[in-house]
Length: 316
Image (cartoon, rainbow, N blue to C red):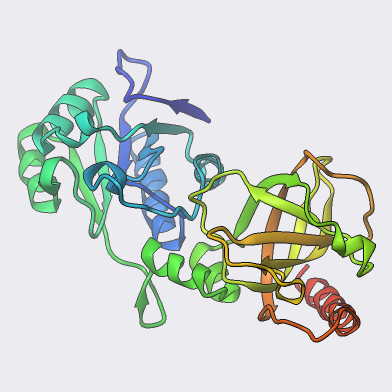
């Protein structure tokens, strides 16, 4: 996989580039349909596939001050695209200058003259350039002038719903991890550094936890509750675990703007402070709740562990 920070000048090293453009947050099953077509078309032309995407969401530049929570970090997006077979990824910083390029400037200046694209594959709702001028009608018109082929991909549905990053964000927010897995085509993950916590899990409850600070503040954290997860350790070993997202209500957690994430890793006891973990979500088993006493919480945690071990055994 080759990563470019700008659209490369094709001086003959790229044969018949086939290009798609988009934010591709999530690299979900709707995006996969585009990528599969991209790869198919590149084989037809005996060419190379290129995905042009962005490090930051365009909305944060077009509408300054807006917050756009991400499904995939830059690293996760690159990994997902590579695993689908994409060998060339152009990861642009979406800047004010880029947002001011007209569709004609982007198409002729960057895609045709600079990259020498052979074909462009776009999603059913995609448009590029200032004021989103570069829609399918624009592309088909220019295609007649430049000879660049254009392929538009239709929408992909899950039941009666059109698959989109917006739908995915909603399902992650609600903790519907089975639905999220169907929409993504893989399980949702979070990565972060293990930081110091209150230390109650091991000292008072007998369930030591690793407290995780996510490595991207814009990454979506699922709704509060208890989850069945698998944890990838720094060594690469994968362990089952139960993860809590919330405010620790039994111990008078106070209102905060960021969710608290802690995971009890099954059959593991080493010190992980300062290390990075990746958590893969399997199922949400219950809401977070306040228990009358630590003893009742311990009893619930034992039941949670039993149920989660069973879930993970069934979903190997």
